[in-house]
Length: 96
Image 1: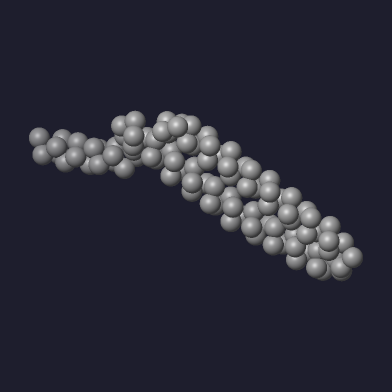
Image 2: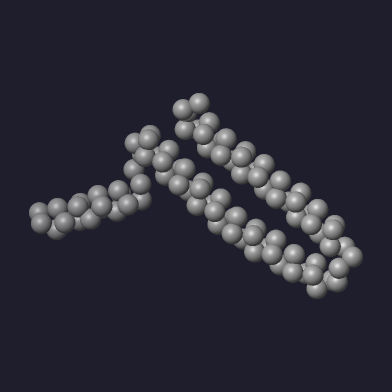
């Protein structure tokens, strides 16, 4: 279970299951609101959209953080590492 790839996969599955449960709750809430005005339902939809946008940002950050950790564990060079090497190379080349 310490395998980083399995951890990332489990993270993704956990996120999906959490999203599914949240959708089921939201649909249930909307069904209870069916007797209310359309304005109330519109507010629920707006709230769902807002939460979806927040969730998308959170998932994106979690995925990128996970990929960064995996790259680091694998010893892969990051964009920052390459930029530092380019600067060192340019300084060395200019000094030669």
